[in-house]
Image 1: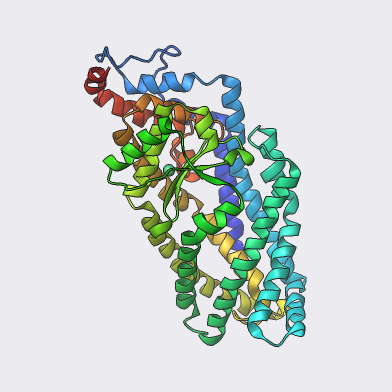
Image 2 (image 1 turned 60 degrees about the vertical axis):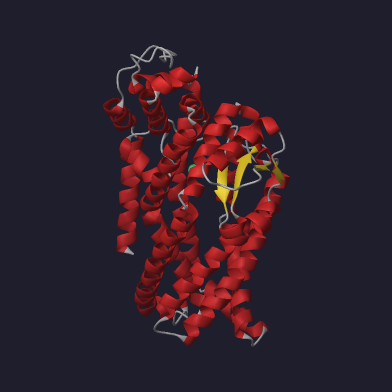
Length: 443
Ligand SMILES: [Zn+2]
């Protein structure tokens, strides 16, 4: 308890320091090189006085100050939301335990049937619906009101709510199945459940990852094959050149939900596919789309999906070890009060939820850093594959709609799951500086 409060206090203090403009400006000023006049980017053909730092500053200076202020505010607000989400869910989980509501939900499930796996499922439905309802106001603010306020959302409330209910339905089914398996393990293997639980969860995660592009993602968006040869053919040519035998590129109708420009690689084994969203298609030039697709192919070629699974594997095993220790300690202390007597007791589920959310909360910077490093690798791969540094820089600016372009280094370390705009544009300009001769010849 003390430790968690301390962690929250530390997190809040770090946030407060980061948010104080003097610190953020100080960081930026320290890393920034002298500004060049707006738009003064050396052309490739002259080749002699190309300074990547100055070119980076010139790109960043293209964003109007009011637009920059707005996207900075949006992204910085997201830092606080990590904290509010964590606090709100923690309070809800604690309330379920302290009020005895969790024990009553277990009793109700046990009265309905004698079949133990069904107890788990019935408890889970009550738990998920109740916690979703209690955190609903925050979810509406975060996912709907705030997104509209910053002009990032395109959905009216009805369709948004529809997506939320679909998510809840998936949570009932997949969460229910996983928990039935996990509680079976905890009850049969009281000493070693944490290791078998970790393995089961991993297999489950891999399975969800595998079927997601084919069975889950289509519940929320339409995926169509990219037909326009002017865009598709250069992408497939780049794919062939890099040893990817893809015959199709998929387009996601992301404009159904948002205005964000995005692309991604999804699935693994046979369900792996490269997807670009329709906002990207509408707002970007062919060169910019090539730059993005080069990045996505980087994820594919460097087997990031498999490395992610390995990373998740470590996180899950350590997480389960923590769950075992944490639950033993807490149940020994407060189990009688909560009428939750052992790990296998369903009434203790809010405790596990609390431990898991604390674990992931503390892990946020590590998780972000793992992802950011892979994204940077994909950026470098994309530059080499697409050879479009200016287009890459332009796309990086477009991503500035929803991601603060010029964070301080500590801020980037803690909160960025992709490199910040300055880092990405600088990488592109550095690549350009080292290829000026070739780019000049090409022209
Ligand atoms: Zn990426």
